[in-house]
Length: 288
Image (cartoon, rainbow, N blue to C red):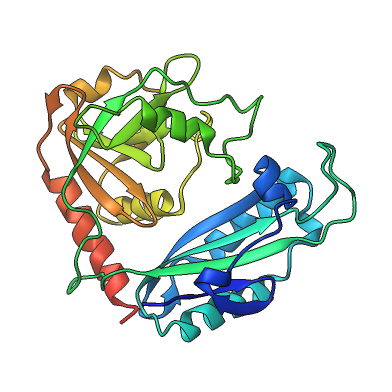
């Protein structure tokens, strides 16, 4: 399929979708983005993603230059229509735009706005997973950058922390890296949020730690509470995963992905994980 992407207000063929080499997103990672799942032609949790994009741009100091949410949604809808996609991966990217090649940003900002998509299979009760199988997690030595250095709740173009964490997994059977905070507490995966079941309670690291509180993370917590599953956020040392009865990770693309291995320990796909997957699938089914 030959895709069309939305670049600065215009739809262009994917092969022609380019940005200026002096764009600060390219030069310095000076930009923010959101990854969304599209179900039945509709972006899942659009408001939550749009709010987080606004917060990220505000953290970077150019929130006032962000186009209105309605204008961003129009570009998203135009991109989906142009590619005739009803089920897709969609990335909405905003950078500070083209400026002189110096580190200090100019106050005047003309942002670069890009929307690109790729087709995914139908999801929901009648759909299929985008992953080949359960995840295998490897705890890495690479620490999560502390908030005092780079705010973790800003979803920026700079993913070097996660890239270096994933590089530690080369040569292993693990496909997701679990990072800890500087003080040794579980934080998050390189591209995912972490959940585990211990003593009948669903637990996930607190957002007081340096992690990105994912949109899917919030949905899963709500589903668990609706199912009367006790939910706790806290500070957990890595060893707690060795005693966990269930483990899974979440992000917008994977949704809820079970984990069957944490370092050298095998983990079963348990009833809490399976029930939450079913509830998530039913929620997604309402889009069709």
